[in-house]
Each structure stands twice: as C-alpha cells, then as structure tokens.
Amino acid sequence: MIFLADESVDRQIVETIRRAGYEVQAIAEISPGIPDTQVLSRANEAGAVLLTADKDFGELIFRQHQVHSGVVLVRLAGYASEAKAEIVVAAINAHAEELESGFSVVTGKAVRIRRFLL
Image (cartoon, rainbow, N blue to C red; front, side, top):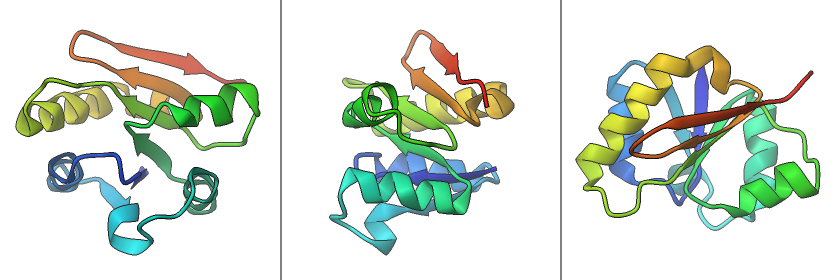
C-alpha cells in the first residue's frame, strides 16, 4: 500500500508511517504548494491513498465526485505530534484494505470509513 501525504499532514505522521514499513510520498517534499486537485491527481496516478488534514478533499470527493484511490482525513487537533502519529499508524494497521477506495476519518476515538462501490 502506498500513501501520498498532503502538506497538511504533520511530518511526524509521515515519518512514523514510513518506519512502520509503508511507502509514503509527501507533497511537502516533492511539490509543495500545488492545488488540492493536483494533489488528488498525483495520488490517483500513483494508486496511493491520500492522507490529509484538509477537509476540502471531502468537497472534491462527495460534491464534485472526483475519482480517488482512497482518502484518509486526519482529525486529531489538540493531540501531540507523537500521539497523532501513533493513532494514524494504528488505524492503518487495523483497516489497511478498507482504506483503499474509501473515504476515512481518523479521530482519537474512532475510524469511520465510507466505502465507495467500484
């Protein structure tokens, strides 16, 4: 499984996911400042699940019906960076297959996954 981390995702999360053995490409490292539509396009081209803390991707997926390979929205405001990273990695480990082609929201209390029919 490959992930593409939007610029809104904490660096600590990206590094922790990499240490857990997953491939993560980070927009902050490869193309900082590109628009959300291009971020989503890059994720699709790579067959990657998009990691983001930006709710605007919900607009692209649900209202504009943009194609995606899976989106994980990280909603962990108020948590320390290390705690955020641990929660996200735990969610990935527990729900890896479900995250692909779904729209998932990771909070400190739950992981909500909306699956899309392909």
